[in-house]
Length: 329
Image (cartoon, rainbow, N blue to C red):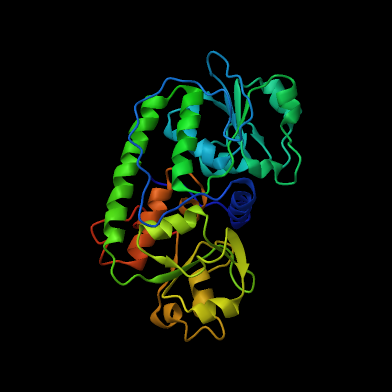
């Protein structure tokens, strides 16, 4: 599964903030990976992923997606021809510029109603201000299915199955999940054999306002699967941390997903006072693909492969780099 282009930093941070505020923390046991062997179900959901009641039309022929993660999943499921509008980020990053677009944070629900979609997928990010901007659509009987941002791989798989069940693509979904599970198991098996685990920090925003992932996040689980140790695992959710705390904890590897400075790796390597941090001293600072570690869907497997090869190049030498020959972001 290969990502397209990188999300801009602003969207990445908003997505991750939505994760912290809109989804419960889940058990991400270091010694387990999701076991997803499941028969194909033809049941249609009667509640969305937030627990709201929904009534799906007998046939879904037209879809609006207001979440990049859901949009990418719909494309994976072969639903491109059924998309009639998307959020602006989805249009930009998944080659859907010809479709009508809506602002994720301030959607024009009157215009959405005019389009007459059978189904609209939304995310808790749109309601981060506290108000539900899609309530007017629900009030007139439009089927609006909300999917809170996942905080674990397990929930990503559940979300994928939910989307597939809504649009009648269960068989395709199970095929994609089987591929994902096979690749996840391969990474997990290698990760479980890592004897000398490296201590890692993932920078979502750079100094002086460093933002990173703690426990109860899918980024934490991604690191755990590949056998790495998150230096901020004692923090909950996505958190702001100081430069001093990173220097004190002295990571072996620094991964950055920052895409709003010209050379984020050089910026880290050149920080005053960081020259004795092990990762900086050894040059183990890497730029990861922003999309692959920020969108909570099946494409996180690519993010895990990339991170694994950066942190443990020898152990994961047999794993193909999904971004070989490309800029990381």
